[in-house]
Length: 97
Image (cartoon, rainbow, N blue to C red; front, side, top):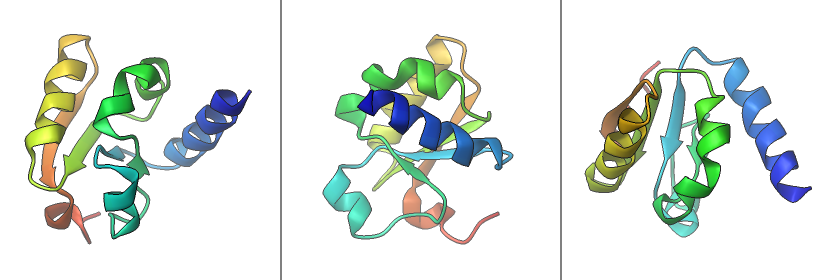
């Protein structure tokens, strides 16, 4: 039930956006600052959200602190057919439309 609520919240948020930004940093890192409108799904939990991510507005842009973790997420999701790209550091995306 809780996962359904998370999915519905994420899905309704991303339907309004032309692209989806997923920040794969830890919850603590995300709480310290993030791109407005981005969604936090830590890299270590991301494979538990495959169906939700596939349902999000694409392209999906993954970001993290330096681009390493977002690069791993990008490689994985591209390999399963999701239109996505590595946005690198969340700081480089901050303020971009």
